[in-house]
Image (cartoon, rainbow, N blue to C red):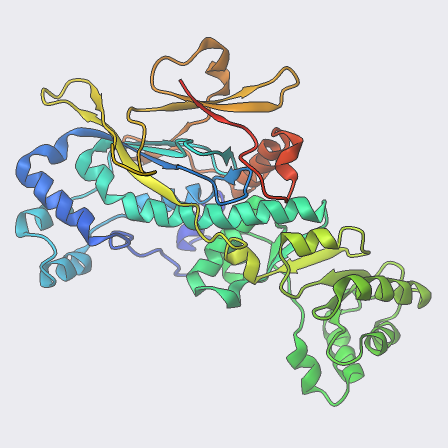
Length: 449
């Protein structure tokens, strides 16, 4: 069996269903193709080049970032093909000339990609992904790489903060109706990397093997003549371990009816409105008084990490989060950029560092970089060290970039569970202040050497 990000999941062949991913070649900006055409004409398109993905700053107030979407980038690179339909569109729209169309017809990425493994944390300046090949190969991937990493890393960072706030209590991702239908699947995947345990989105469950959950909405209660009738229908269909929604009318009356219908073995009740802190305490007391001490309490209703943290002392067993999660909890992008940092010289031998040198904050550091995380004597991270020369001996075994693609072949695909576990370990290796929700600077500094 292939991994959740592997070919069987990609094509659906394991289940015999046609869910093949279409070409990703047009998930790009037009100027990448016009640059390619001009570079082919000048002869510079075949120069060896190094592009790097990094961010100059974390979203305001955030203390660490989470690298997510790596597995989806690998899928996108494999599917970056200019088939007849795509080439026909480019020809009709006169995007590029005939010579460039002929070159694109045979395009396959044959270069190398290294990057932070998925789930790892990152900081300003971290070379999150490095793409090496010809200029032509590297420039074509810019937009699709950035769109995946910026989106998925934003969701994963929000998920990580919510997981910290939840203190080990389960988190359910339920934001599909608050974002683009395909973005919802990517969000579920990123949230799982960041610490969520389940998703309501069946497409995410099918494609990535994420456990799915869900029972009923207020419409189901309103459909029936009485709330008790709705509860009875659900319990008869799904068993007493189901979750009953108790805030359609009067919460106290609903809890009483729920236990009477399902018995003391009722699985859970869900509260989706009102003062969640107050209601959670009242419902817990009522459930205990009714003999349903094992019945869990699930809360939803526009939660974010701050609302979750405010419920830390409440008798809540699980949280469901939607809108705030899929929009990055106020930061829907990580402001990652994809920059050419080195290219072959005129003679074609060796790499020449290159960097933008402009006024303002959009400067960058040239050169092909390595990254390592220095630890203190207690094994806690104390600095993100980035350099272009030899790696110091004491940092050699702390290097962060791993091979993802070698000479065009994907070598870094892994089960999604591995990324999820890695994030837990990486976050645990940061200073304790990383878990504070209050605004602050990056929890460790970035040092360029």
